[in-house]
Amino acid sequence: MAKHQFQTEVGQLLHLMTHSLYSNKEIFIRELVSNGSDAIDKLNYLKLTDDKLKEQYADWSGEINITFDEEDKSLTIIDNGIGMNEEDLIASIGTIAKSGTKSFVEALTGDAKKDSNLIGQFGVGFYSVFMVASKVDVISKKAGEETAYKWSSDGTGEFDLSPCTKESSGTVIYIKLKDEEAEEFANKSRIENIIGKYSNHIAYPIFLNYTEEVEEELSEEDKKAGKEAKKTTEKRHEKINEATALWMQAKSKVKQEEYNDFYKSISHDSQDPLATIHTKAEGVNEYTTLFYIPKTAPMDMYRADYQPGVKLYVKRVFITDDEKELLPTYLRFVRGIIDSEDLPLNVSREILQENRILANIKQSSVKKVLSEIKKLSKDEEKYAEFIEQYNRPLKEGAYQDFTNKDKILELIRFKSTKAEAGKMTSLEAYKEAADSEQKAIYFIVGENENVLRNSPLLEAYKKNDIEVLILDDKEIDEIVTPMYGAYKEWEFKDITACEAPKVEQSEEKKKEVEEKFEDITKKIKDILGETVSDVRVTNRLSDSPSCVVKDAGDAQMAQMQQMMRAMGQ
Ligand code: ADP
Ligand code: MG
Image (tube, rainbow, N blue to C red; front, side):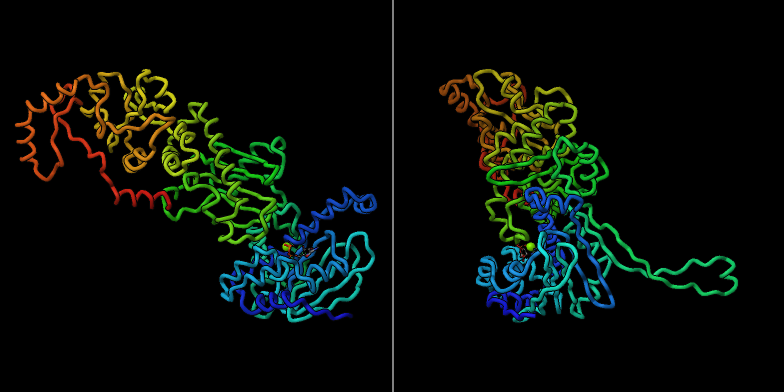
């Protein structure tokens, strides 16, 4: 048996693992399972490319086995993948620190919490096992080679390496748990729970093996005779993950029903989704996305503490379902997954938010979702369903997402003075219907559709045959509509704050009228006093004698803040 010193950086790292990193210990299972899955990936590839292995592994298929033993206080993770020879063991988990390990150690701050976040970013997954282990044996045999090797360490300073025998290729990782961790991790439901959370869609089956004490079933006769039931132990071998990443399958191979089932399993929704968007991107960034639009908006859509609906995976390994930045807030109703081939496993949240790969995925995902909604809009009936649920978040989007503003505005639907009762119009339709002189989109905002439709301010527009959008979702319309600026160069104009269209009066005529009515406007102003900022003669009205209008610069800060909070910002 040969003793080896860990390289300084590895030693430092191990010291840290055993002494100061104790948040989120459960991830060691995810890391080891993911290594097993990587090892199977590699053998899968070799089997395709290496003639010698092709024959030998003709009947082979990859799997991961986990066993635990409460009495022994141990956990074993076994894969039948590529395996490691002596050099591999030394290089991968020993003396030669990967460049990642070195930068990891350099990046350490000494603050345990921050540092534990760093673990994943640098791909130092294997060593995380020392958060829970008092001793680890790695027994491995490389595919196509004869000798197997056993690597053992207690995570301090050095490791032992010696040849041993092992029948088939692959790796066995025997973890002797620290006393204080044994109860938690040598536990059936805890393991199932961790696998379900992180490794459910690993492409290979994961089996849990354990023995269970069972009591012999006694016959009525034996019971009467007072015979005691014998206890025996039975071996169990149960698959504990789904073992298929649905999103990795070719679109043409997946039935809508399978998409729907998967949607239900991730969304906790009992209805089928309104739309399914499955995309595989290749090129600079390689990733797969599978998005769904629920029929009914999620219950917490208007709560600041809403649960984001998109899960992030890296190569089928679950990373997080609590990252609000994966899609913009206005698309928070979208459910689904993003699976990246390029991100490092276990990227920390801090890194996620400024990661360029993820920013790219986000940008293309938004485009994809928006174009899918546009497709949906061709089906009037289906789209009405969509609009009923999601018109409001789209309005937020048109205000938040400057890059896609026009695209989003095109998707929003509006009540209007010209739309039939119960129908809504789009800005494209609005523009098309307008006469060639018109270069603005007129709107009026308020709480009550009826009151708005009867507003005296509409008279001048009716007379001039100009369509006015009736915005009665005041809470949001009042804030976002003035912020849109323009749609394809057509400016949005609030009719309570702009001049009426097609002013036929000349300036002289206007002055003349103003002078004529100066006395009366002054009198009204005196009576109303502070409650108004001005009283003016207007050409806005044709039938009604007067109306109240808004100051163009009215800022509704309090309400704006409330709205922002509701949008989850
Ligand atoms: P990463 O997986 O990011 O490379 P890890 O610390 O998890 O980092 O693993 C280090 C290396 O050890 C892997 O890249 C791989 O070469 C090797 N390794 C770990 N576990 C296994 C395994 N079960 N089978 C084969 N090789 C493994
Ligand atoms: Mg790993």
